[in-house]
Length: 162
Ligand SMILES: *[C@@H]1O[C@H](CO)[C@@H](O)[C@H](O)[C@H]1NC(C)=O
Image (cartoon, rainbow, N blue to C red; front, side):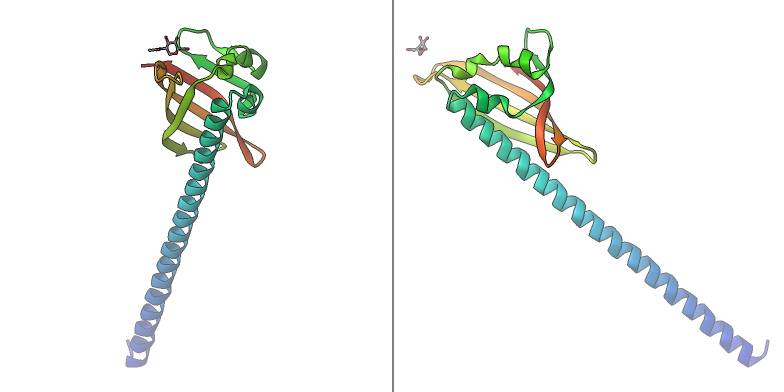
């Protein structure tokens, strides 16, 4: 190999390594950007579900059944302790008239798990007391929220008493 050829080969190798390095840096930057995007999306979904949970609590405390039912999907599956599954909003509504009683409700989101699809899983704590402090319900539940247009509606609702 002539010194010129050797020199050219060396330059080519260095050039190749630089290009390769740039490509991997670019890939890392892209991966970081999509991780940031994913984290931002998860945060905004969590904020949205937290807000919906608080709004539901307000409807419950206002004894407003229509307001409360607005959070449910038309095809909701409601699974309450000691009851068969209730399918559809009309059926579920018949079993939610307890909302109209005077009590103090606390709905606390304990865990919000956005998926990469159009559903979000929320684990909750629900506490309901009569105004005099006597407990009515002290339990936990899971809500599966379904993305409907730019909003989320409760598609699966599972609750039971402790
Ligand atoms: C609290 O109020 C509820 C509903 O009115 C009633 O059933 C219960 O007996 C009351 N408890 C006490 C300790 O007064």
